[in-house]
Length: 282
Image 1 (cartoon, rainbow, N blue to C red):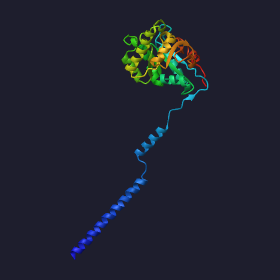
Image 2: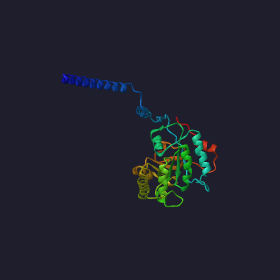
Image 3: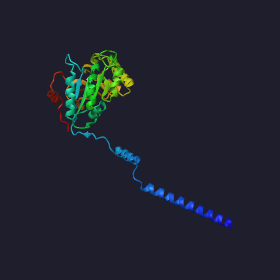
Image 4: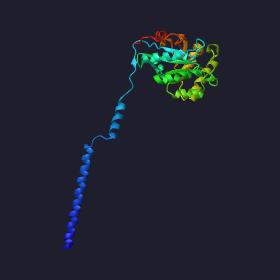
């Protein structure tokens, strides 16, 4: 009799365990379905929302783009190629306050070659020769999140008044500065043979590509001078655009390798600067 009661008690206990297990499992499933969103759920939602957001589409212009390409050299004083820091900062401040977007080299190439713009008011700021004093603009560029392109003479990086490779790398790392080619020795390309021109164009691009880990696509002619041979060699070397010192707004109708710029002279007022870059693109 005792054995029968023992077997009956064991069966009841086993049945209780089974019922308890099933009930617990159902409760867990219910909790999973009805539980509120966790932190991980919110993060996932945020990621999805971020992926949906895209950069503002560029605007296709109905008429050919007229791009103001500003030309600076040294940020100092002493001659017509030197613009004092106070003036340069005032001009950058004007651009910020009047909602101009300062283009990167890649953006400028895109704008000119596709006749599109990220917004209607754009400007491309270039500084020739890569003087050491160009670094004076960095605090303002960082403050206003603006951008400039420095046209470097690659054979001059050892000179005390020019940027060294280490300084160029540091400036590029800020995300506020691009570097383009101003040839190796800053020679008058018109006075060189085709072979000599090729050496100046190719070697400077290779130096920049190798040392700055980039694909240099813009060339600025020394003293703004070039000829048809230069244009052909620039294209063959891999440059997509080339700049002169011809005065005016840059237009693709000039030719990719013959683009005009606007020289910023020392001593001009902010009002004169505003007039210099004023253009309507539509």
